[in-house]
Image (cartoon, rainbow, N blue to C red):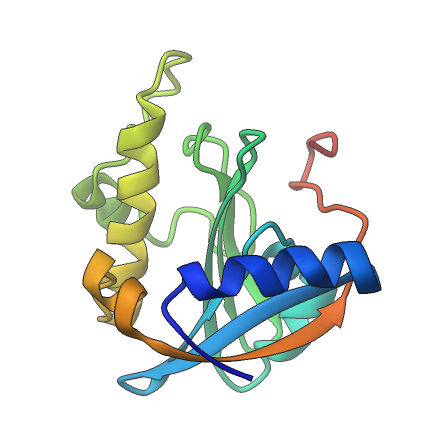
Length: 167
C-alpha cells in the first residue's frame, strides 16, 4: 500500500499489531538510500533482521521508543559497527565503537558519561549523526510529504542492547 507521510503509517501499524500480531513499516527512496519508518516496532533495531539486510550495504537505524529505549545502530556488510543507547552514548558496542567519536561530538552527543543528559538533545543528535553518515537530511517536511510503500513483517518480542537487560 502507498501512504503519504509518516502520520499515515500509524493506523496501519496499530492494526497490524492488533489484528495480525505483525509489524508494519513503510519505506521510501531518498537519494540512493531507503528510509524505513516503523511506528511502535523493533525490526529496525533487531540484529536478526538488520544484519542480513545490511549485507552489501550500509544501514543506519535511529530507534526512539516511548518507553525510553533509544537505540542507534550503524550496520555494514552484515556486521554491526556501532551500537548504543542514546541515553548512554559513552557506552558503545560494535566492531568500531569509537569509529565516529568526532562525528558524534559534532552532532551534539554528550560523551562525558553524565547521568543527567538532556534526552531531547540526544534525540536530535542521533538524527544529526544519521545525516553525517548518510548525507540525507531528515526534516518534518520530508516526514510529512514522503510517499511510503507499506508492508507487514514478523512481530518480534523485543530487542536488547549488548550487555544490557531488555527494556
